Image 1 (cartoon, helix red, strand yellow):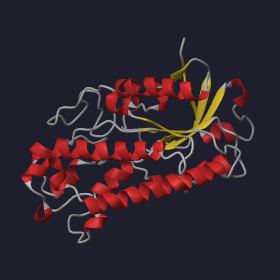
Image 2 (cartoon, one colour; image 1 turned 120 degrees about the vertical axis):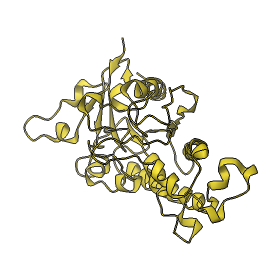
Image 3 (tube, helix red, strand yellow; image 1 turned 30 degrees about the horizontal axis):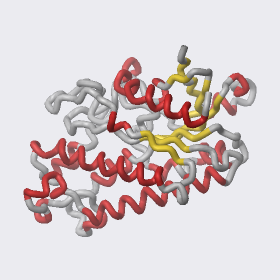
Length: 293
């Protein structure tokens, strides 16, 4: 019988009078990430994330540094998080069985959000209308290749930092597990209290026609997935980094005109608990296959 992953906070581990008994867990992971590891909605009854839906054959745990409220958290912030660094390679470090990481998606959204008035195409992922390519290019006509090159350099440099942090402490050489992202439908569906939507406003600002917005999102998320897979395959630069590709897993897409929960999506970029479960269960199986029960 599969057992759900026990998700702890750093406070559970470091509580001065009642620290969690880590010896009760067969495997212990340190987790850090964006809102797919914390929360995606302000409604407590609807909250879930990838970690909450993981299950393993034994009793395993993850100490999660992605605290609730991280609706958008860029990777550069993760690799400078003092709590995460302390638990990984600082004075409070453990020898973890591996790192669980959710990173890249919010970096992409942030990069897409650069203003169309930015004159340097290397600082934008999208092209303003005056730069659009020919119709024959499809959704790629809206994307800035120089900007994508900048984004690739940025993300790889942050993974360089992550590997260095891992190898600077007792978890040197331990596996890093990351995932790719399912493709959202750009739509008017936020998380509440003015949070979101995240993709749609940028696509509107750039004047991208409504009929092409989903294809632009698919192309961007596809490029991000390919970049993460490339990082995982570069075993010399990024040793023992394992990428789980979600593109082969079927999710129910949201309706573009729905402003709330639709399909497997609780809002524009976050999944329902069932949507996360569809990704988390096979990812957990891949992690267990890599580290052993």
